[in-house]
Every structure is written in C-alpha cells, then in structure tokens.
Image 1 (cartoon, one colour):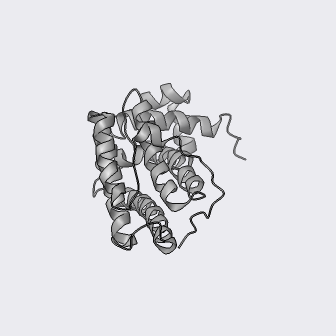
Image 2 (cartoon, one colour; image 1 turned 45 degrees about the horizontal axis):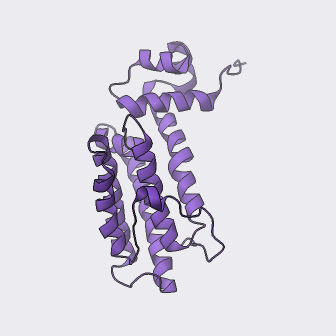
Length: 216
C-alpha cells in the first residue's frame, strides 16, 4: 500500500509555480524546485512524475487560482463592467509584481515549441477560453444594446485577446502604466467603453445587481 503524502500539495504547487513563472520551464532546475518546495528530488518524481509533470500541474494550479477564478467572478457583472474590470485587474496585478513576470500562461506560450504538442494544445485551449469570455460579454452587450453591432462578437473578442497578450508581453520589459492604458483604451473605445486607467478602473464593483453576462 502506498504511503500517504506528507506535504501540502497546494503549497508545493504554489511554490513551484512561482519558480517556473519567474524563470520559465527550461531555466528552472530540479535544484530550484527542491529548494523552493522543500521536497527531495525523489519525492517530486514520486508525486509528479518528473519536472515536466510538476510544471503542468503548477501551471494548471496557477490558472485555476488566477484566470479561471477571475472569469467566473467577473461574468456576474454586466458586460461592459466585466470587460473593463478584467483589464483593470490584469494591469493592477502586472504593475504590482516587483519582478514584472507578466503572465505564466503567456510566458509558457512563448516558450512552447512543436516538440511538445500537448503543451501547445493546452495553452491554445486556455487562450480560447479567454476569447470565449470576451465573446460572451460582447454578444450579451450587443443583445442588450450596450455595445454597437460592429465589430462582431467574434472579431471583437479576438481583438481584445490580442491586446491582452500584447499587454502581458510588454509589461515584462516596459511596465509603464501610460503604455498599458494606451493599449487598452482604444480597444475598449471600439465597444463604446470608457477607460480611465487600470488603477482607477480597478475600483469597479466586483458584483452588481443588474443583468449579468450569461454564457452564449
């Protein structure tokens, strides 16, 4: 009978994700992982298979805590507020990180190669999830008359996804609030949304009693 694990898995994944997020998959060594998690190399391999297995579990853990939680929470808002709050939180979080690491998902997308098609498919699926969130918001806003009919919900969602990914890359080397606001403002203006800047927009209420966005 296998012995039960004697470590807090969530804590280990948090620490491993922090290491991978900071250095990337390739540059993070097994020694880095043993030091940050407190586990031995044999314990890591027994629990997660290998370094790649720990990386995938850490990435999924990170996305569940950050991206998935944000989408579920913000979809309770009216469409315009949901989109504005999404970008506001991203900018606020990005600028608050003293190491300016950007987004672990986007960093992984930049590091992924054709040699690991499984990882590429996983990252692609996560970007589709973000795109679908934007599409649902835009479609709901168009149905209620909050947003103009043009661009289409699909085109608008893909434009917002492109802005988001570009923002997440730029913040790693140019963490300038004015630059980030300049990326987001025109994209939201196409939907008739006002953007006063990430730090100010982040003050929008997290919950609202008006009609929420419903999955389309």
